[in-house]
Image 1 (tube, rainbow, N blue to C red):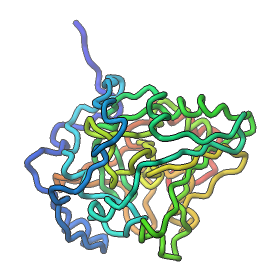
Image 2: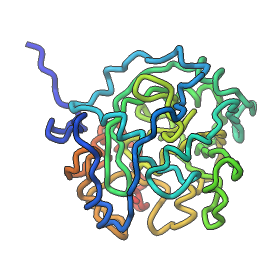
Image 3: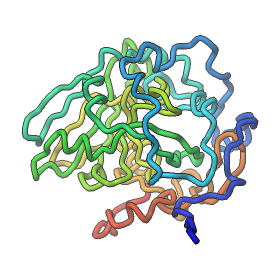
Image 4: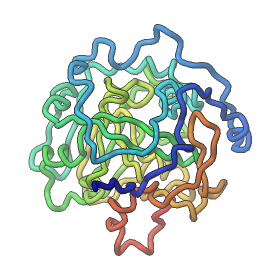
Length: 319
């Protein structure tokens, strides 16, 4: 008899996000000191799939190796609860994010590579092996969701870039346009948004470059046209709207690390036993349900990634 074993990140059905539950986060965010008054994206607001030159590629084939034994978070919640500091520091950023101009869009690959190059986003997407994966997403603010991302393994981009052996890290950078993105006019943030991974992390099976979600090109407020998904790390590592990949000998310093190193480090791996300096990470709220569930080490993906950190035990791996 064929028996299907539960993957390491399995959650019980009770933790699923039902379609008919309205998002209610007042109690949680009040405890965190954040106001979330706002409304859903109004009908008629442009989505990333409007006239997208790659829209014919979606939905992409589903990769059954990356499953969740729970329902995904309904799209309406994902579209209307976003961090995108380039457009503002509140969660109801969807309307403001529609100012993001995603065509034309070019991606620069440079640093320690055989040949530096710039490629148009549509050319890049069409040359990569698109697929859909179901991933858990855990924010450092102690909320979570489950998302059907579409994109390609970052390993494919690394192969395309042909890094030299001294390129031990990948530095990623988002766009810089304060006229388009008013949040970038705030001088206290060290713009542009930068994040980084080791080359081993970048080529791990889980590391995914996202171009779509929910069977269509990814929405602007979710990081169009190209964002990162590293589901074992806190969400601030998953940089949005990427324009540059630099392969380098030097460990990149992310925007949040530069802003407050004592709270946001380079590694940022999920660990329920290591609290944020201002709140516990032991549990998380599942978006759309108001339910709190236990947080899992590496967000439940330890079978894939725990081995990456052998020899780094002396570093702050979980902040």
